[in-house]
Structures are given as structure tokens and as C-alpha cells.
Image 1: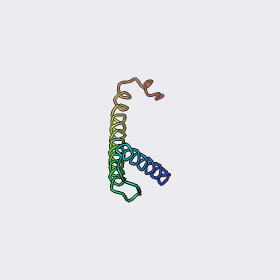
Image 2: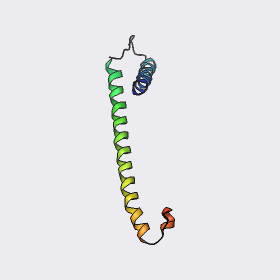
Image 3: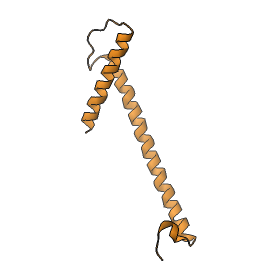
Length: 87
């Protein structure tokens, strides 16, 4: 699954580089996976994905922490109906 996603991102990166070089009327005739422009674009994509994964993990951690703190407070207040807890 991850390999398939990587291949799609790689194709998108190459397509974008081809469009940019065509628009700039660059004389670059052969763009490969090893070309510096494709590699730099893939590094940018990789850093974006890594940052999004870290942010997602942080959000999940905060969600678990907040829910774990709120459940005992609500249950202690004598309103278990809010949590669907039967007495």
C-alpha cells in the first residue's frame, strides 16, 4: 500500500517537474527519478508527510489525555447519564 502511494507521489512529482520545465522553456530533455529537481521535490513531500504524521500523533495523544481526564470528573459529579454509565 505504501509502495503504491509512493509511486503515485513520485509520478506526480515528475509530472509537476515536467510541467515547470516546459513552462520555463528549459532545455532539459530527460527527467529521471535521479534528477536533482525530482529528488528535491520528493524531499519536500517527505518532510510535509512527516510533519503531518507528527501533528496527527500529537492530536491523538491530547485527545486521549483530555478524554481520560474528563470521564472521571463527569462520573464523580453524579451525572453518569452523560457517559451512559449505569449505576
